[in-house]
Length: 68
Image 1 (cartoon, one colour):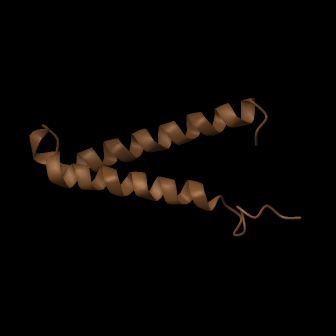
Image 2 (cartoon, rainbow, N blue to C red):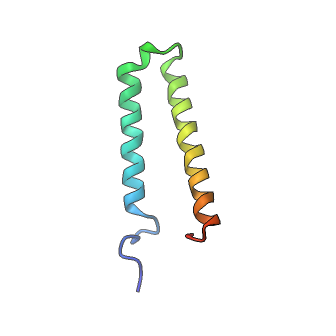
């Protein structure tokens, strides 16, 4: 029997959580971005880079622990 939480080939809960985190980050940059010495584009790039690195590190940890 297939995984009910994984009907489309990816984990829907993870995608929704990641999308929500991205929207919150974007809203924060739009609201408070002028308080930083970086432009909005640089803040988006920095935020995206941090999310990618966190995702890769978490994925490697899951593989190393044998969960994936």
